[in-house]
Image (cartoon, rainbow, N blue to C red; front, side, top):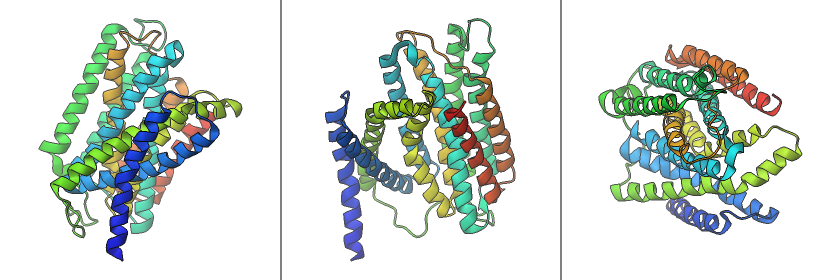
Length: 366
């Protein structure tokens, strides 16, 4: 019976990405009636679960921290493609799209994913434990990238408005790529052991002891299906974005709320994967996912929009407003205090979730 259940699980996770891609092909660029939107929403939700399953298979095969890096980079690359596509279609009104999306990703990952992971692990295991050396380096990189790319444009004077001049934008893009590349090298090669899960006694967990490692063939199949599922998730999210926009407008909320909702949907696979890891007492894996996704979102998006800005019409607004800068500063200070001890209680998880709630509240009622 157990074997049949596992076989059925494997079958649906293989079929759903293919169905989602076919549905995406039929719905891309079209106005969707309500019934179709409902179907898309269901397929989108199931695709997220399939993506998480295949990400876990790949992660188990390659081990940490490579597994969390695969999911973070895959989601971000597709997210970047979506941002550039929307900017190309939106004209001047999309000038703040990259900034809003990247900032939403930073707040959701650094507060939402971190908060829910710490809360889940601490409630189940009393204390959430992780390595402060690797996690602290990741947070420092996120803080530097966010300040260089999202805060400084508000204060530069070479160009009117919260924008970079051409040379400043080139510098920010190159710096983002260099820092992200340096972090990946540190995480996966030189100091890989700083990013592995640990026990409450400080012992490194280099593998899951209770599960058989999948074969290379199985991992490669899951990698391909993961890519399909992620393309479907982001593409179907874009398909329902018009419905989301109409709903937000009908509710009288600011347009920026659309970006928050889309970011929440796109980051859902990582959120579920991080929560599952936290419940297994692999909090370091959860933090690798959260901070890695935040870093990749800035480090890959800014260079991409910098290149795209040469043929896109309209300004490229990257600078944050005063309210968002306060929330970013609060996030980094609280995250530092959370990470330095290497241990967290439910209190720290709750604090991060309250900061996320404040961000969403101020997005709805600025």
